[in-house]
Amino acid sequence: MINNEELPIGFTMELAQHSDVLNQFSKLTKEKQNELIEGAKCINSKDAMRDYVINIFK
Image (cartoon, rainbow, N blue to C red; front, side, top):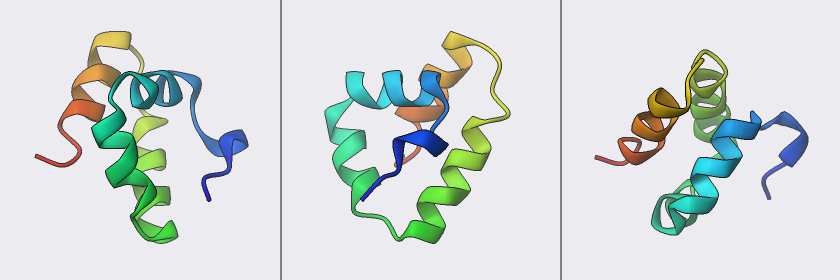
């Protein structure tokens, strides 16, 4: 299960907008999820976060 306290709010909001990505993200190992979460913490704009989320599984 994903611990929402560790997710950046912009990342959470973008995942909510892209249910296909959210479904795939939830199936990843905790280690891989944490890797993607850490990457999201470095993103400073809404557009960049959208691009990050959309391209996670491409």
